[in-house]
Image 1 (cartoon, one colour):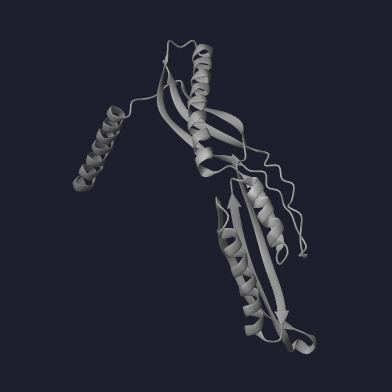
Image 2 (image 1 turned 180 degrees about the vertical axis):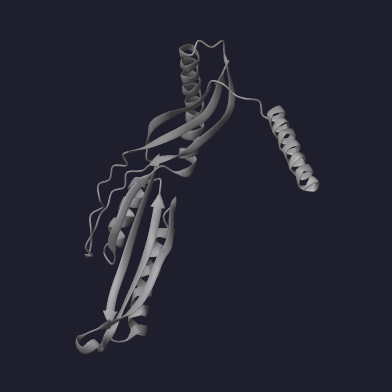
Length: 229
């Protein structure tokens, strides 16, 4: 009985001591306020991206693949000869084609390439050339990583300034003498591109598409906690 009582008293003393230790380490906070601020900017899209594909069917999968590969290889060669244009393969698919009674009738092969450049005119003319043998599946505009990073760096300063302005408003509303910044986080993930979808039909010669890059919105968010004194 005494042993159990001693153990209980020891546990209580331990909890009180632990509580006092936590109190010493973590003093009570008053007038703690969470705030959020942001800064936005519309910036010009400076990167144009397009995807083109070729799709063919036939009874002999090797012949179909060979035909598709020749078209794609030629498209990559043409794109590679144009300065400031990046080209790469995006996907390659080979799958069977079934008819009635689920009997195999042939094979279909599809291959897709992606091209991008900051030179809109050069890329637009390239698209026109490639559409003689390929079809356009996507055309879009966005902000290049380096331009977006520069805009975000400039917006961080503005967003932090907006946060301080709100902190001052809170301080005045609470009749405080000042405030301490307890923590702050900055999120530069706010990016909203505006893509343009397009579809084209293969022909002997296709006029280059008329393009306008437009703009995208870049946003920086600041979240923080202040303690008004």
